[in-house]
Length: 231
Image 1: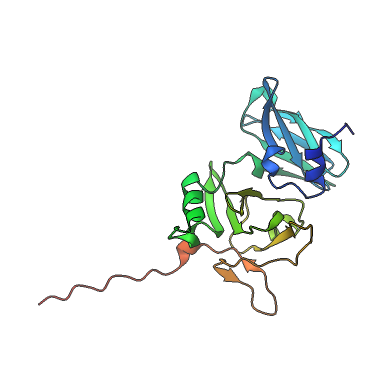
Image 2 (image 1 turned 45 degrees about the vertical axis):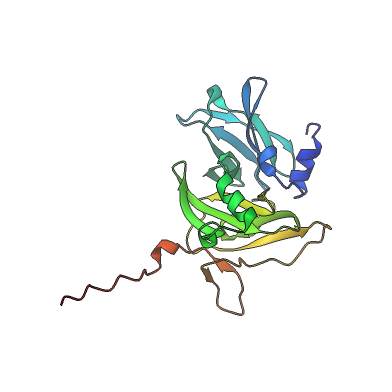
């Protein structure tokens, strides 16, 4: 293991309010370095679009890896080994923000007229990759992560970043319709709160289960205009 920064330890301990500041691609000294936190992974490679692979160095036994992208590429996937299983992953920390600056302005003013299109869980394609955008309002949180079927309910896998007045967001590649999910929240006082369902979810489990369920709102029936009456 190498000497780690305070930001790295904040990632490892699940305390970082903006994991994009540390994880994902960053330009340093004329090269692009990638950092990934994949608990339980034994080996991780960065894979360039044409298949070139560059091994990432394990810099902490908890599953923190770092290394340079091959051939200076800016696009990549991660190839991780978990025991005997090898999987290719799209790194959620290489994608742009979910909310626009205009969204944040309207949300901050309390004038956003279509909250249900921005907050909650929304299947979409971002930079050609299918996944789900998660956004939740938690203004008094110190840290929020999304947990669900797509990450084995591990709160360290998908920490979210805070934007505006307490809007936490993250695009999770390859999360799919039908996956169950909740939000894992630490308060500003450091209290770990019970897992929270999504107040703007379009679907949920049947009680007594309480998880929210990813749903494609485009499948909701739309009312059709009444036919014109000829006179």
